[in-house]
Image (cartoon, rainbow over all chains, first blue to last red; front, side, top):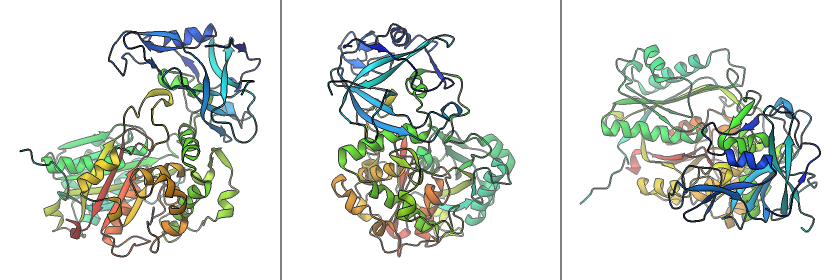
Amino acid sequence: MSPPTKNSNAPVLPEGLPRPMPLPDGLDAPYWEAARRHELFVQRCSACRGWQWTAEWICHRCHSFDLEFEAVPGPAKIFSWQRPWHPVHPALAEACPYVIVLVEFPKADGIRMVGNLVDPPEGEIPIGAVVEPVFEDHEEADPAFTLTQWRIADST
Amino acid sequence: MTQRRTLRGQVAIAGIGESVYYKHGKSPDAQFKLLLTAILNAAEDAGIDPREIDGIASYADDGNPPDRVAAALGMKQLRFSNLVWGGGGGGGSGAVGNAAAAIYAGFADCVVVYRGLAQGQGARFGSAAHYPQAVAGEAATWIPYGMMSPAQIFAMRTTRLMHEHGIERSTMRSVAMAAYHHAQNNPRAVMHGRPLDEEKYDSSRWITEPFRLFDCCLENDGAAALILVAADRAKDLKQKPVYLLGAAQGAEYRSGAGGHNNPDYATSSFKTVGPNLFEMAQLGPEDVDVVQSYENFTGAVVMSLVEHGFCSYEEANEFITFENLIAPSGKLPLNTSGGNLAECYMHGLELNIEAVRQIRGTSPNPVANAEVAFVNSGPMVTPATNMIVGSEATL
């Protein structure tokens, strides 16, 4: 999706949380591979052209098994949010509070993604604000992976 | 012509039993011993030899398997065993429904529904310290972002509820205060002697915004059990029979879509399950005398009450008040034993037991002449379940 994305300097959350790995059966591998390239790919049905996330073997609309991964069109908007204060994992002991957002893609059938909000404002987080992806590389991990975080767009 | 298929009035809850309820880590007894105690208490309550139990129903990946229970109790035979899918507390009422269905269908004659859960002896639900170093699949799209505990998994539905429908924090506070109020009359309650007022709620720490500490359920050690038999048999047993008038389970369209992609987001998963329940019970929300509504988090209780028709979204802030939620005077007495917030987090099965007490007239906070009691289990999970029980007068 556009606009082009930028690297984050420091990860939102410290190392030590469970890291993501692609499913052994290959279902969601294109999503994780795209994130490494700093692209945001989700499923799109080749038959009915509907967008689908998270990944599944079948199109829930038309039952086609012919699903491809494509770059998801923007904009992305904040649909909901929370701000954890209680550290539920030892790696978060010094990291609270942080903000988790649920981001919605109105031009991609309303699919949603969970991520962290980079540089969040204090207090209420603006539902409906346009956000841009920030690809957070974890090069030191083995294997390396990339998380997709979000930043409120300047134009909002 | 097809006859309407219904469980209404066919099966009764004849016995209820609990262990002592403890704060997590405080039980001197092992989880399995707590469970056996609860089952034996339920059998004694019913006046049934526990060896006559021939069926087992549970939920939430209960860690006390039926083979071990049947062997430990010396059950003469095991004819039915069943578990509702799902790791959350959604299945409690569904397990009661499954037990009743088994009896009505002839699989078994005497079924125990149980939940044994000592969080102090296993992993605490509110901690993710035991999570693996790597996660795959749908959960990999949220766990690495620090969304790990049940409070975190469900918080954003409540944010959305407040945003879409103008639900106020004071409405959620009323749910918490009613539970704590009722627990003060319940010596079994973990929070007995620990009252809650507005100031204490308002100044409590955030767990994750929009949830404060008192919006969240407890973590406890304990066990609970109910024993069901056919309605005609229940009349000859020790207690006043409490009849199952309806039970339902499930969720609406694509409720379980991964990564928080359920189309209708700010829901407790009862928009279809609620009407299905009332259809079987041949009752409406206006017929319910007392409500036991599972509090994983207070916002979910608000959703559950609306989705079952006890009030509308527009009415919620004015209707869901402390005065309306307390027994015996309120319009809709709620969680009259203290529930998951203040009696014990027995994964909601303590709510099913309290519904039975209300119909028997033995609740610590009795609602006068209660004939119809409602329970909904585990809002926001899939499958979510619910049930309605009633006195003989409702048959």
